[in-house]
Length: 495
Image 1: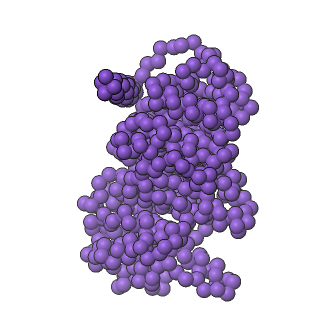
Image 2: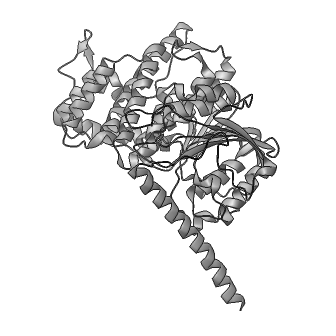
């Protein structure tokens, strides 16, 4: 399967309409999705037949894969009826895509797969310029079989690799990919259960939600060993467990497709800017049991966005943190990646948010990550804050992750790096890399990770880290200047 996908990427790179990994991943995705949908529908039709029922297909006959993409005769491609060249492009662009885009407007049920298909294709177009290239790609993908769980699992791994390659392509695509070992450790700590609701306010390609699904659904995903769940539990897992927002159209499309390709047919993913939602007046029924995310940071938000938050700030990371705090259900658990500056900054907004976090929530663990976790996208040093809504913070368990060698693009973080952390965090075991801080010892709400077991050493930062730190420092200076300016303006008005 992987060699076939590699062949397709090589073919698409030569097409005049495709430029870069982001675009060829997008194009492979919609074709893979329609083949997957065809196999899914065939499987459901077979299941219905076994119990004496008739399955109603989602797609009209004209738009079924077996009729437009790869019609067969005696088990082989029907060369007479299989469109190619300009005929294939005209059908795809003028009939197939308008038909699929229309699904969102003809159904009122946002949980239905028909609605999800419409939501996906609303933001997609065929970019393949050569009809013969499209014909070649369709023929290769037609050979892939997604009828059984093992093949579907293999597809999910390949799709994850495509998304990773797209992220490595640079530019803004870095937002699509958070290292899977980091996602897994956050999910393992939160330990989501069937029947709980799970939310990511900045889903990207849905890596966190998919890892949470795998955590709930499988006892051993590599061996494809699934937990025994009732029909009711499976329905809840499929329709009422996973929630998220994503404002970027391509990220949104990739995320919904990724969920469906992993087996979640009806994820509750909205194309929306999370920060436009006023977080005040939220009811308990609208909150979530588990929240996990790596939200965008380093950005600035305008005044209209800041009005949605009790503590105003133009720092994106502070707004997302407030959002997650307010959306956490009583007894709920949260794990979020934040830049290190959030921990040690003590200007008005940062101090106020951390004061609320420590007084209203139990910040039980802070995982200090090494530099290089998010290369090549960012060199900023980050941490993971774990907190729950079970009273206030009394003490914080810190763990400093110290890989034996420097993390690079070619030597990224892996599951082994987190083994010691996972073995000690729950029992709060003190090691060379871990320590506990009592809330009474925290001054000015500075909760940065300062390992008392280590002597301060000179840290030699890479050029990219220095640039990132300068950008962050400039943002902090601008924030302080804005606050000073506001105070002075207020003083002038009073005088």
